[in-house]
Length: 510
Ligand SMILES: [Zn+2]
Image (cartoon, rainbow, N blue to C red; front, side):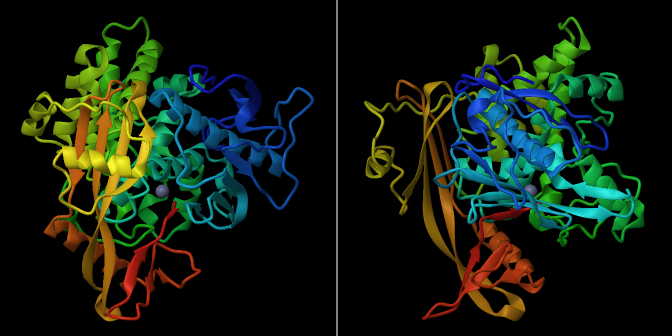
């Protein structure tokens, strides 16, 4: 894989990495942006850290190691993370920031366990491993292409929208984004594309390498957990599903890892995320079927479908909410971009998936063709106060909007996001009353000439407040609340006056 069209790439480094889990792939040569690697897996964006010596580049500046040493794991993880970053920057057409200053620390050997996580607090992604009795080997998440691509997906989305910390759908979108990132990144490798077509024969309703997420991790995990029914599932999650969007309050709740069988959709974010990852994979299949009509070969059709999906997905991220995201916002954002690409020729293929999955109604799809209200900026604001000034002119100054992000968007666009705090009273059951500082979100996108392209406001409804309360109560009652320096989804902070504050933490586990 060479992501040569990425706007920032000037010089390439060669390295050996595994383009899928080691159970089903062999290491192959990849070329990526040299600046992300330096002479010892360190650059301005990524920095690998380990308790053993970190791999050094050879005399030509390359990292051509064979599997079997901790240094290979380091190069592999660093390469997967850099490759996912490059994939997004290629399709988005610009760099993606982290939600913090400085490089992201990559810890390929973070300890023993069947897990991996991204933490904004520690500015790191962390990969664990365990001695698997069922596979008779050490299963290392640092060797898993899908786990690495998923975890860096959390970091990328957190950089674009740091306000997606709470609410069932925001949290589930984070997980779905991670799995979608693993799918899109896997599609960058020709060896993977060829194997997908061997697996499914061009029929995307069949399973393949790209529907099976975290093959080695899942194969071992499933054999070793308490559930005998999943013992032969060769994945941790599958993107091949028919789940339709449903209001999470109508679904059963569950713990994580799931106690429910995989065919049961629950409101637990990893489970609920499968609506999004399943839809994302269905979009690939729908686009493939359209492209296969004209392409000279199945491989060409798959490459074309990949790039259409990647372009639309990458650009759509400009529009997504700053807080309180729902799947329908992400679906609308994708159709908005589909409408702009090549005269809208892929719109119907994607709209069919959005309808089938209940992500959007026909009315909502039709409304996307309506023009956005006419509004033009003479110049882009340079300060946070300047960004807030736009809101008065748009009649959007009804809340205490705080300027959040000012980002470069696709095609010279500018993206401004805002968040407005809203106090939500909580009943944590046996843990008593509490409150949380939730947020409404606002995203404005302007084209290179300053013309308003989209506005997405996501206020908190009564339903959203109830959802936040359900989520907080489930965390509290399952004993997952952590102390001030602990690790977990949320903590309770005592307040001098009134009930304690429930704070979701910026840590995404698995
Ligand atoms: Zn995750």
